[in-house]
Each structure stands twice: as C-alpha cells, then as structure tokens.
Amino acid sequence: MTEAGTDTFPIFAGNTFIEPARSIVARWKDHGRRDVSELIFGHAQQLGEECARFILLDHSYQRVREVWIVFMPSSRSATVHRGFIPAEVVARGVATGLNTAGLSAHIFSGVRVRGNKNDQVGLSVMQRRRNVSGKFYVPHRLTQRFSKDTLVLFVDDVVTTASTLFEVRRQFHLGSGTLAAGLALFATPKS
Image (cartoon, rainbow, N blue to C red; front, side, top):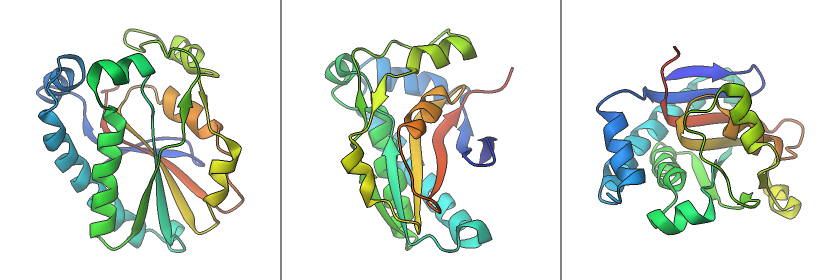
C-alpha cells in the first residue's frame, strides 16, 4: 500500500495504475465489461483486509469502533451508460474485507453530484481541482451518524491527483475526533 495526501487526510492506494491493470479497468469502465467487477471486487476485498490489519495495529486508530466507507459518485450519465458506479464496487469489496477482519464496516451512499461531472482524463492538477469544485454535496442530515470513534474512508477506484477525494471530503462536517482517510484501489504513477 502506498500513501499520499496530507497529515490530516492520508490517502492510501493498493496498487500502481500500470499495465495490465490500466487495460482491465478501461475495459471495465469504458467498454461494458461488467464481468470484470468480480475481479475488481476481489482485489478491493484484499485491500480491505490489508487496511484492517493497518487499522488494528496503528496506535492512531486504536479507538476506531466502526468504519464508514464513502464512495466517489459517478455522473448520472456515466452510471446509466455503465450500469454501475466503479467506486461503489471497490467500496463494497473493501467493506467485505474490513468486516471479514473483524471491523464493523458500512457503506455510505449519500454523496450526490451537482449537474454533470466532466471527465478528469488529461486535465492538469489545477484543472482537475476546478473541474470538481462544488460538484458534490452531502445532505447535512446524513453526516450526523459519524461519531468520534469512527473512521470515514473516502474510496475511489483510481486516484491521480486526489482532487475528487479532497472535494468530497470537504463536503463532510466531521466532528472532532472523527478520523478520515482516502483509499483507492489504484494510484497513477508519479511522473
């Protein structure tokens, strides 16, 4: 697992987004290969089990009693075209891995997209930040369930600059003592 992000919002990734993963994910997301979901789910479950070991061993997370997994939403048109949300498949696999390892993990599906979310492919860091700024919202009543003994994992399938993770994280008004981290199945290599 690799780490990026900030001290207050670390971001972990399970694998580097290189071949053959790149081609497999492209077939899954862009070419209708829904059968790849099972493979992705299995890798996400392994990542969840690895995360559980980290959570259970790292003193910073000793007080965590439950984990809420917030997956990054896709635009309505992408969801209709694909028939699924890629980050939700990853989130479900991670939750299964965390639960298998003895943690209490739940899926949070309350993040909404405002308007159409434009594709991030080929954009610079600054363009990606502008592209997602203000594109997501979370009804405030939905964030009330997070307590101080909760870890909120913001999950995506592939992370490049983490702009989406940071923007969605920004929408949550987490209470003092609530821990937050980002998690992706793949991270693009730093150039």
